[in-house]
Image 1 (spheres, rainbow, N blue to C red):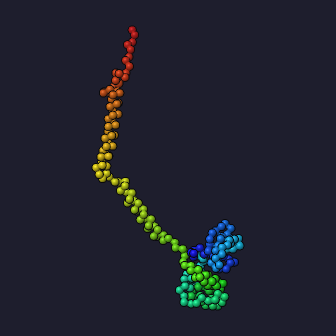
Image 2: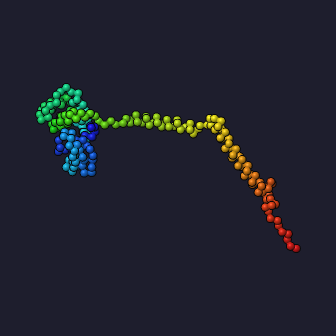
Image 3: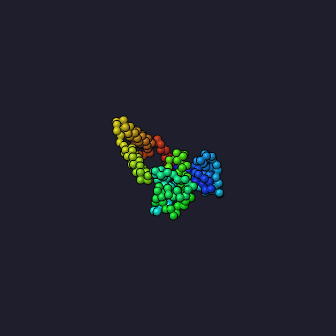
Length: 208
């Protein structure tokens, strides 16, 4: 199961794997009891875990960053039903969190979701996006390779006697055909180019 396919659904506890999207909702599978159900978008809203950000004293961070801090922390997970314990936990685990804007209910969700992810052995990581610079370099190298391969093909001279013989043979055939056409033309018109007597009707003498 991939982290990128996980969603939270308003009004429903826990996390869900997105199985299929429909025009009026989605089919999801619960990570708690593994049950599959259709959830209507008219009643519920869906939030991809990958898209959730958390307020901090600086720039917002992705929820993954908070989960990673929880993974690396030696602090024991608090009881999610104890708001004070939950806040104290994040004050130690992620002290830069903006506690004036991150509600107690949100912190409880993070603890609950982290427990579900750990229980299901899900690797917590964002979808890897292709490196644009690396992609551009790879494309340039491929184009260069295509040019190198294509150029010799166009300018490749005859390398052996057989190719030369083939080229010479084609030339001889062309010359012979030209001579044959010339001979036929001369035969039809005569050696000096005038019309031949055999092909020209004689004029009758005028009557006196």
